[in-house]
Length: 161
Image: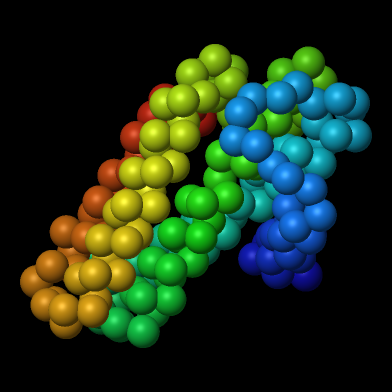
């Protein structure tokens, strides 16, 4: 099973988990090693899905792929939805357990900033959706660039190199 399919399977499990329990976007500590491992897998699945949706958009912005309004709209909607869920799955502090992660401790120390950056991703995704609706091809690259910039701002502060 390839990475995208695995990520999708984990992501679907996330949806079931989220719908069965209220998930607050505030930091909570993982309650066990098993919980920390699951939280890390969910967090990584969200980012794999972001990556899979950003790839084609980045290719379009760089001119490596032709603009495809259907793909841009679909991927922008997906990124908006992922941004809505992001803080829920980033909020579990896994630092007390030995889990393989690219997350810096600063995520849980500055969580309000993380939430702000997730909101910026959502806003940028909505901006691309609006650009596609207008059909103004000259606005596409800038709108995609804002999504990329929102991703980069979070990576710069919260992802280990």
